[in-house]
Length: 608
Image (cartoon, rainbow, N blue to C red):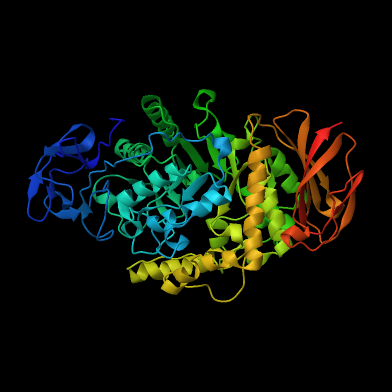
């Protein structure tokens, strides 16, 4: 594999000559067809077919013809201007980058902001995100995270039904639009994370099987047959996804990828596909001098995924930690139904602050087995935490955001719990002003039978958790329109307060809690008061940040620990500054402080 340039699909050299390569190991003849021109490819090693020609130009629409019968879009297409059932667009991916001075920030400094491109702005495009970049900079965000942009059916989709891994969704702005967004983000000091899906391929427009053994019936996934990472003929499949990761880093200057649901990747070969992706990524970093990160979504509580290859791990840099979210929600009052049934509240939240995982070898009622393993030796910047994200909102039947499920006071407390955690915080778009529009699940399929299956599947997926009437129709455009951000809210009284509160929390995190050492906080549980005390060390070893998290509806007086002296109240969500319920001030503290109901307080302190 040529690591410094894309070697599959249709690519262009410095003279704009086309270099064409497609994997079709079972074919006896392969041609490329532009409608006015048809050229035969020559067989090459490993089941590939290739051709170099000056007759194919950027801007040409093309198809591959397999054995003179099947006329198919390019699996490695860079553009699908007429959708997933149309032809592929020949694109010269070269871009006039102006981000040469950009250096990816350390992962410990990432403050993620998750975005669905279409629902984020009125435009519903990459340009729409660019128009709001200054808002994100003002907030203090350091990395935007885009939900998947690989081409999917229609114009409305979460992106996890993508079927062309290399092609950027046309309705978002295509390849050039994504490159422009990344370039602008880097100019503004923001990293860009891209969500990629390597555990399945969407059902509509998925023609991969016509080219080769991309799938295997050895394993089943929630989406059908697994992608073939370890069965016969899997080399070309593995190469396809490795090339995809490298393309985002190299040709689109993406700073990190978030690999969706890696626990659903079935690979029992000696070299796991994630390990191979890690190896090729490391080699790319060595050659380019740039820095890129691999972040996994994994629900196995298995630290092997974020363990270095040299220590027999798979080499991912970090992972999402859903159990922190689950414990936080139950502590805040979420009913313990469905997957929340495993979480007891304050004790489990305390355990997550200490270990990231809650289940580290205990019996899980939901899974009906002992589950998980303690992540010994892992650092806090290897875990991403949140109080809400696209899954946790959208997998509710009515797509309710946290702002509509919890009180104003609890909302502020949950923000403090995330942003003052030792882990990497992630916000979901609109969270920073308390957006009230839901984020529902939506699709735009064209197959009536598939639409029916999706509707029924959504009803069945969370029937055990929610019983609130009729499920919103994922196919209905109105479902998507309900899910768009209402930017006008940000100027309204309470929403403006929430925005300024988030700005304050992020500013304090960056000032006090971003430093080299990685050490779990000291956590004290006040179970009778449904409260937690956190001690976070600062760069100055004589100082600390002391946080009080009161999840109860009761006000109480709290003694200051003997080993510290409070110097400043950094933030108190219960104060009138943040439209809190209490007029009491704990700023004139001595040996005792007053803690408002459902409040978050953070103090600067020094050790006695």
